Amino acid sequence: MDHDIKDINLASAGKKRIEWASEQMPVLAQIRDRFEKEKPLEGKRMSACLHVTAETANLMRTLKAGGAELVLCASNPLSTQDDVAASLVADYGIRVYAIKGEDNDTYYEHIEAAIDNNPVITMDDGADLVSTIHSDHSEMTDQIVCSMEETTTGVIRLRAMSKDGALKFPVIAVNDADTKHFFDNRYGTGQSTIDGIIRATDVLLAGKNFVVAGYGWCGRGLAMRADGMGANVIVTEVDPLRALEAAMDGYMVMPMNDAAKIGDIFCTVTGDINVVAKEHFQLMKDGAIIANSGHFNVEIDLKTLKETASSVREDVREYVNEYIMEDGRSLYVLADGRLINLAAAEGHPASVMDMSFAVQALTSEYAVQQTDLEAKVHSVPAQIDKDVARLKLASMGITIDTLTPEQDKYLQSWEMGT
Image (tube, rainbow, N blue to C red):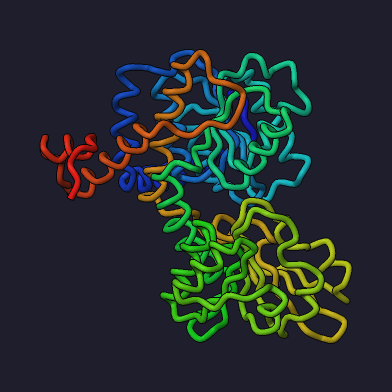
């Protein structure tokens, strides 16, 4: 079987990791059991450009159980778990093209390998697969039934493509499903980002000024977890409503120019470019730590930082580079500005990815049943969200109330007033 991974001999360790994650993913397991029987994706060629983790492996197992002909490549050069990639090939018969630390050329060679699968369905973390198909393989756009996008960054890119009339096939914004962004983005990103920063630096968060750039769902989760660790949380924002929410949640809110002067740890979660830039580097304290938990490493202006630093010491700790400025200050950048929670840690906990990947699996099933989806960005059907939430509650041993016939009738009527 064709593949490109680091070492097939890592498979046994990867299988243990995949099976451990599976224990925390009961909703996806139920879907996998049904897919095994019903084969809703029988014969469908699927290419996925995702973070190659143990949780993703369980999604791949589910799609394959449903009959899909799968190829998986990495969506980020530093997010691959090499033992998981090996196990997917050796134990589950899934073609994988992903090596942790792969260079940019290899990264895109792997995306091309996924495209060579001639897919009719695609999945993305960040829209690199979809954008490459549109840019370099436009002849394929007519055959693709649908794509799923898992990240905020990717949805932003795809909505821009749709607005420009450049999007040639339908995409479903899995990222925007309630069971995804309420939980994965908030609780998953919050915990795993803190985990990555601590693993990379061994820094004590208590008493530190922790700057969170962006107060979307990921920013909310990160601020909550940093606050819980005893940090003084500072939020920077461009959206007045989110800034107001952050202030009412009890955090300091200020422009990045002001935060740069007092911050000890900075983490970007915006999905935008150059959020931490030259003017901020010039103001930062000696010893400031800079990380990113948005999808791409463009949130930190690393090019300018390299140009303005007098010297760079790489790997002063694993995943930590020291930039020594002209005035002698040291700034520490984690994981080359890439996703700190996946580069230095293990990504989101499996129990929260259970919901996100359950939505991915059910949305894939929904997509192949549709024949008339317009070439634009679509929402996940509300029923899928509700079904996943019900299954998750059941797996947690939680029951909830149901409306009585009287209550249901009241909510659908208008006649009864005060």
